[in-house]
Image (cartoon, rainbow, N blue to C red; front, side, top):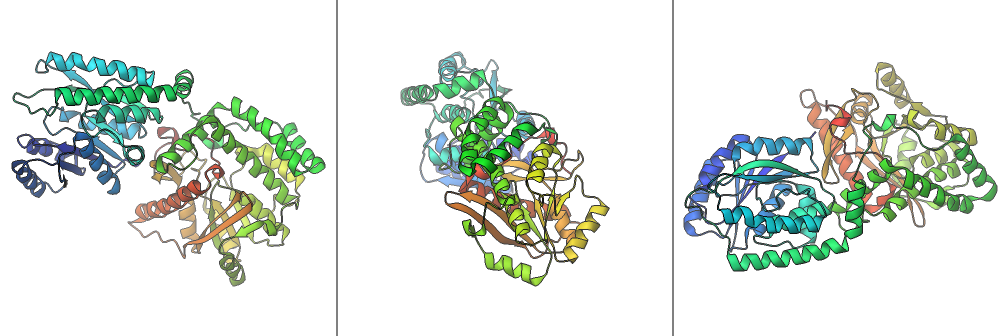
Length: 560
């Protein structure tokens, strides 16, 4: 999966060691962000020479000394703006064993959501006061997290996931000096990020320059622990729950996860809707969804994980609480009831706001075929139902339905037109491509969702950034659109407080995948799609319906 690391080095007057540190780090072939925290003139000259001789170095200078934390935050933001996904913090004084850099990168690649924290192994050069004095902070961190997960909170050799870390620094002012390393990792832990402790050798070179100030920094650290302990008490229920019930996801691919709910229960819901009306049926959903919420651990955890990632990219989105996870699952149940309402004629176009409707009508009038690229977002099925009831037989849904046979069978029995223009496809082969090409040539529309990896084990996927973390998306929709040589539009229908809204917008007049640049072109289109989907998720957060570990890594198989 995509992993774009960088190295961040805060520096304040370490001119004797910085050139050696950078020379060793440059062998790893990643950008090196050096942040000069108001160093003296001699150090500035050394840094200028280093930046000139090492093309991977990107040098920034803060106008005055603000502290290590301020310099690290500046470097993390610069790396994130440059498109990096992770940043390895390295001290400029040569204390860290730089031979361990590949191990940090390997752990970050394997667990991209985790903070990879150096856990120092000291040699004889380390002062005893430093080794044993750290245990005061260790104790308080264990209290503040109710966990031994953080092996050492003070080591400055650490790999950060940038999306979560930068989001944290944007919404909370962290200590600018020596307390920074401890506070940021505690708060990232509170946000739900796992911590991987990586043993690493730390040395104290003879004549090394320390910026630790006994009274000032100890007072700052004491105040930090006071704040963090208060923060722990405020988060006590959540921390205790997480300790008793740690996050867990099903390792099965989404297409092989067992469908929940019985055929009888689904039929009873349909009968209650027909006999007692929409309001009663929706009231009945609440206890039903409550049972599924409490008994469906994997789906519940997936919802909380999605909401957590969403909030890390924008703080005004719903918090990852049980209440909001329940609301998320209830929105999914409501969407399924909306499908029934649409297929049985209980939803009319009058209750739907259609953005860019003129463009859609122009497309229909042109007689051209097109791909409508959707997502498991809102209720595209409702739009297909309305198209069928209005006699627009040119809208086809390209779907995989094996994982939801009972639900689809129930809906088909309740709505005779449900299975019309429903193209069940498990894999894209030559015969499928020919069938779809014929439909495009006849001027029909193909609705394809682009936010689930293909059911086939060897399905082709591409890793792009989604809600601040690399995630896998299928290549198929973009390959198919290129083969069909037709225009592509983004197409979703979402439920809002006062009804429904259809988003219809051009995506590409034609998708081209040039020979020799095919993978890069697919990644570009997939990233555009993921960015637009992320924006829709932020706008209506409870309307994205993927209740499985969407950000799974090795569990999804290799990237092709």
